[in-house]
Length: 294
Image 1 (tube, rainbow, N blue to C red):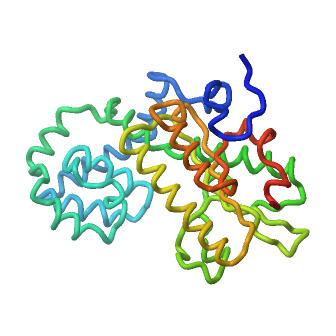
Image 2: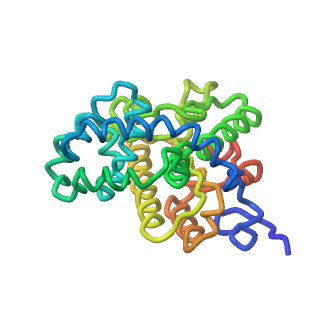
Image 3: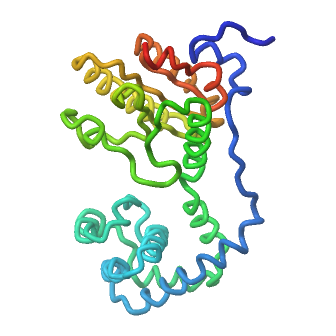
C-alpha cells in the first residue's frame, strides 16, 4: 500500500526499498583479466624490491622511495597483505610515516625470508591478489556518482540557488572557507547551497554518502559523526542568527540494513526542522525553496 502525506525521513521506511538508488557494480570473474593486466606490473615491481631488501623494514623503505604515487600506494597495499596486515592502510600511503610504522608495527612484520618464500609460491599474474587490489580501484566511485547526480538534479530544479562542492572526485569544502570565523575551520563538508538573489546567503550545508552495505560499529560511527557535525553547524548558525540548514544525502542498500533507517530518522528529528536526511528519489518531494528559506 502506498504511503501518503510523507513529511519526514521516517515516513518512508515502510517502502524504503522503493526510495533508494542502486549504482551498478562489476561481476566476478569478469574483472580478472583487467585486474591482472593492471596490477601485474605492481607484483613484478614488488618482487624486484623484495629480492633487493635485506629486511622487511628495508622493503618498506624502498617502497616509500618509489617516485610514482600510484605505484607506491599499490606496493604499500601488497606489503600490507604479505608483511603486515595489522598496519593501517592510510598510514602506509604516507611516505613520512615509514619510521613510525616500523617503530609501532615492525615487531610484527613477517621476516623477509618468509615473505620471499610466500611470494615465490604465487604466480606473477596472481588472480586472487589482483582481485583484492581491484576492489580498492573504484572505492568511493559510487559516492562520486551520487554527488554528480545530485548536483545535476539540483541545478535543474533550483537554477537560482547555487550549489558548490566537488561534483565527483575532488577536495571537500572546509567550513573555514564558508564562514571565516567558524570555530572548527577544518571541518570538511561535501556541498554548500547559496542564494545568489540574497547576497549569497548560505542556505544549507550538506554531506553526501553512498552506502553499499554498512552495519555494526561502522553504522554507529557514521551516525555519531553526522550528529556531531549537525550540532556543530547548527550551533554556529543559531549563535549568528542564520537560517542555515543541514542536508544529509544518503543513498544505497546500506540504508536498509540494521537500524540505519531509524537512526537517520532520529538524527533528522533532532534538528527540529533544520536537518533533512534524504535519498536522490526523495528530492522532488521533500526539498523546497520554502524549507530552505524558513
